[in-house]
Length: 462
Length: 106
Image (cartoon, rainbow over all chains, first blue to last red):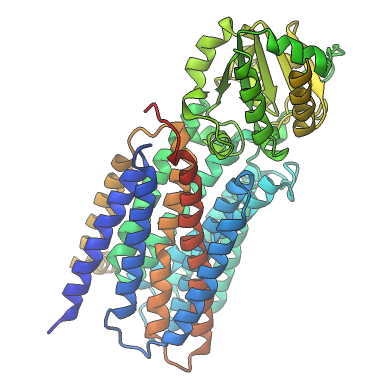
């Protein structure tokens, strides 16, 4: 009896489970269940792969050991990670998946039987899995470093576009060389590996600013494609389909994020946003007005409508809980409090939603970009907490600004704007913000959590 | 030319069809996702890309018990991919748990 058909049938079932899970994940009502369904599909697929007939020594001890180590680390870090650190965590996880595809590619080169025809599908898929996996690994690590601040945005290579194109040409040339050799030349394989690892770095380094979420989404897609590559090596359907599902849906998600910023994907990838900004406006000697906390507390208490615009600064300061407490305090005074969420606020789309949900802010208080902009003219006070680029009016009118064209939260439409900020430094995109010098704007300098804490006390006392 | 024809045997064509059809499915399946779900969706899809762990499992199962290079590479591969899978699903679940008890408008 041939078991392989049964195995394929079982794999098909887990593929269907994956698809149902992914579908569920894309709707709010079913997202949680969708994630669990997808996890179930993954569990099934792994069990099937453990029991499918194979011709080797099985080496189950090695497999179980590795699964326990990896699963344990994964579970612990997922439980421990702070919600604010989510973007870099996802980025890191993603790189590890890529690393696995890369290792498979390397190992399977070593396993090619002597005398294998080099110009063959087997060699091509090995090259592909290794290349894509390596790019995903180093690219994700650079993204991780940039997000957690250990790599600064000014960490760039000279002439990045030239280096990128040269590396890509080198990768293609090396692949062709490997495939046209009479026999396997491991030196060339390692050269290709090295260049692929380097390309991942060179590809992500020039990208910075608010574009990081797009890059993570894109790298996620790349890892999916890497899994597909590894699946092609074994002719394994679930890896091929699972990988390409992630690859394709990742591209769509990436494009949706780009649309939210009103930019094309190409523009994000070669735009070099982080490095080119900075200059505009810094020569202006304009005066900022500061507000003191007790005045602000009174102003807020007598307002009818207050809107909070959260940004990454809120996440960094861990100020989401105190923010919710202020919301409650003001609601008790009869003030209507809403949150305006820019699609790319924070370091990941939906980042702010997750953070505010963590501190129990109710879902219907969160306004998306357009409803928020519609509501600003009737809003008394807007509190901009740790957000910068997403409220920068230069995106509307300054064609020289690197963020020109990005839709923003038009907070200047409101009657008063108060900006909570650590200092006068520029935002992640490195561009100056004319909002801070606006007629209606007042600044409240200091750590967001500390300032909000004082504000809460003042509201209670005033 | 002959080499190109060699590439296109039945098996390759079946794979190619699979690839093309799955790509379309992947693009269709997402549809219009509200921004609030972008992060969990990315994170969940990220966990699914850990399906590459199966490749590493196959790699180890096919290896000789004395082929330590392959075993070690496979071990590292499985461990890393399992971090991706388990961590990815757990983190996504944690994020989505926060939306659970709230009233939803859409």
